[in-house]
Length: 98
Image (cartoon, rainbow, N blue to C red; front, side, top):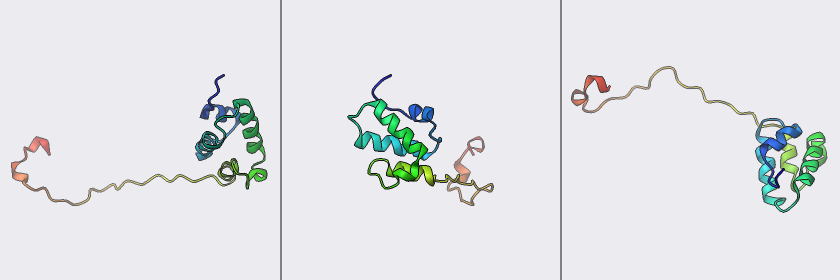
């Protein structure tokens, strides 16, 4: 078990596979870089169980917000029809290249 915390460690704790893992890793790397991995994992487990308690916390506040109100990811819908466009020099382009 190394010193560096990874997303897999947070998933093993029970974190949902959404943006909260990225937020947690960013906050930990920024504010808790020098602390032991075990201590951070126990605190992360407590944040996971009681996110309301950590809502105004300096380090874990954003993580708790991400757990309480997860960000909804929307996929862009692609158009089924092609947009109209003109090809300049169409008579010079080989038919197989179009």
